[in-house]
Length: 572
Image (cartoon, rainbow, N blue to C red):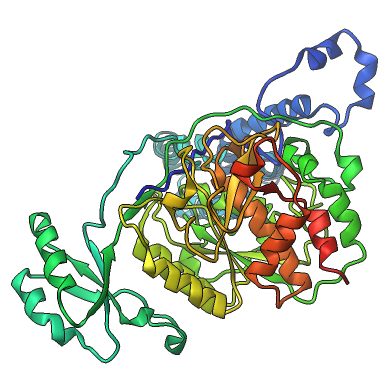
């Protein structure tokens, strides 16, 4: 199956600013200079973005020259330390150069976590060169020749590194085209379940016949709560033997179940413009500069939610697990709400998982980026369970392992912006994983998919017991790509077009897809779980459905979630 989610983004921006362009309205400022004193970042974000970019670029360019000048004047001060007049002159030049270097380091374009190691590197060089030159201090000409040699060497060997230090180069998600089908995992094509009381030795003859390798597929902490510990992943060395292997394994008395271990992968990403809604920060009472880009907040009446939440106290801080490509744990708009499950899950080279995390649980009212449903940030927190590779691919086994791990780590909500059309008529393993998660108190929210087809043919969207999310566009019609949820038991809708959120490197972008609609629902369910920790999936869905509003295609999409009404339905 394929992870069939259209994802779109604009060029990367910092701190929620809009893309780099100047509107006609902004250009008119040149004709009316008296307006300048009234400018604020919220009223003219494009102009302020350009101004800030010019400033940071200027200091980034100054940085290498200030460093070299600091090194040269320090060396001169060191050499003439016995000559009071010259020593004092070089000391003053050094302090001036060092101040310029320090200011350029502070103002240069880069994150603090990147800047501090760079500063340590430069200080090491700045201290080492005078010590090295002290060997030649007794001989004036030897010292000058050595100094000239060092500066020349630094010019050709180190200056280019200095020039490229700032602005910081941040890796952002690449726009790539993926094949539409990936088949089975070449390192483990099949998943089999051994019957209770049977052993792997009971099927060893067939394993040996085809040189098969069978390894435990899942290791749930609570083995008594599921029989997923009886599952094995089977590597079939010769693809030509696959049908024969499946036939012989299926006929063994010790085999309870057999299904394909299908691969998944992210779909192509397409650039989409944003639809800003200017001037709404005052209405919402928060200062996140990216708020005007969150058109979905208006559709979901999030300002009313914030009013309702002022009288609510969470009984717990619910944990939302994003099962995806990982999450950038150090993102400026996520880290205060992020808790780590495992350090290897706390980076995201693909960007998909970080974008979903921002939708579900971005830090609100912190002066940067975007916002989420929790205005005060004390209702939910977010974590990452990496089930897809850096390239955005994974397998059925990796996703199910992630579901078990998230449940074992105490997650309240699992958000799965993944899935796809399956070759199997049933996916029993997904069902068992869902049952395990439910027993642990988890509510599982999954994407409907982006193939403009019926979601009943897609997994895990069609698994009995999940809340499946379709995507609506900016006019509240079914998004052109969104699968239909009309034949599923628990389908709802959320905004999924032109969704602005976090991506790795403390930057922001706009994506499309049911992948984006899903964390909106996961974020709301997490909020509900914080107020009612015993809330079940069926109870949550009933509230979402009863309080949701009609879309232009309600039968196909389900009802559009309304967070304020849903929280109000919980009572006190």
